[in-house]
Length: 196
Length: 196
DNA sequence: AAAAATCCTTCAAACGTTTGTTTGATTCAA
DNA sequence: TTGAATCAAACAAACGTTTGAAGGATTTTT
Image 1 (tube, rainbow over the protein chains, first blue to last red):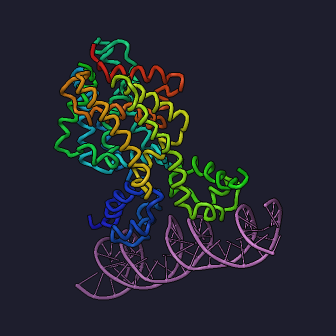
Image 2 (image 1 turned 90 degrees about the vertical axis):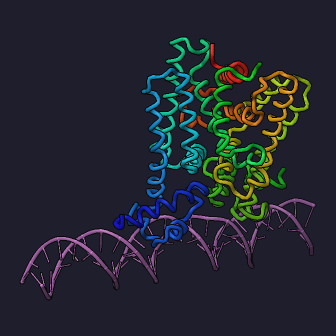
Image 3 (image 1 turned 90 degrees about the horizontal axis):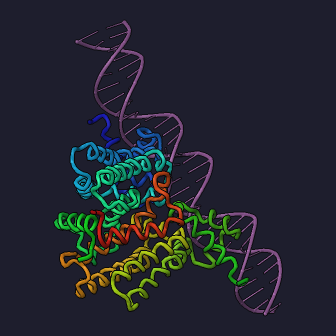
């Protein structure tokens, strides 16, 4: 631990900084000062600013691979969707920086997008699409549904809620205590819609 | 027009650059070169890089104010929601840069977020919430719906579809020819859900 | 066991670029 | 001849990276 003390201190300090200001909005001096280490340690341990950013992103997107576990479970498709929504909420609550990197890379991609972010997102969406196809073939869902549109619709409902927080914080209560209610509302709309 | 030829050329050149790389990812020399004007024209016409960015953002977010027109129309709430979805799709198709600024400011806010972006987003969400309340009071929707969660869910379905394009372009067909089908699917899910 | 050599880590300082902005001269139409 | 518009040039500041010395622990040699 004492070995790579500076290394882990740099990642810990760089994560909230990159998340808040983006790759180009943060200087190596800023990161080093926040980590309490010399700025040359960035090149020493990571080989440069860009590779430090890549290390942060790799760590941040690792939890997304666990979505694959949902697909392997022995439950009906609708329960898998609810598990996905719950896992997404839990993930964002546990790590408040992930969504920032997620959307920052989608909007202003760095070289990391192709290698780290895009594969991770494609993996999740693919699972949702296949889960929906599975449900369709077992006649659990309406047969006029488009699997891809529907998968993106569900992912959009839950992700957009967190994305919009900085803008709608005064309009909508985003407290974690309401998460259970939010999940139920989203699943209700997804399954039976808003009509009476 | 010949008067502020350089001025409009700067805005036209800066818009796709800022949209693709973010405020900090673009240099004034890059913008000036793309516009074909001297880099000192940025300070001359706008008073600096930051004010040029603000001018771009003001122009980009202006169309969002037209959502208010939907609220004033004399139709039932469900039709207003469909009009909102259609207007959103049309807006993104007409201006492919708006969503970039939208999410870029939500994720890595500049000083413009509080003055331009946040009010614009709040305005749209407020209208959606009020439309939903209106529908609830007329007993058009299920009475156990939360207006804010439901409004964000609808907005999320359509916005997330466009946001995810760079990552899911190979998985999902994002062609404009499918827009009508997409709108139909989203409105179907929103109104009656995915169950048979 | 003592001394010497090697390794990994850290540091202040300096490197050459690039940054956004300002300057003062120049152009050209009114 | 006044004024706005444009230009190349220069400005200080900040950028990411490299450097070479210094520290301290470990290993190797005596």
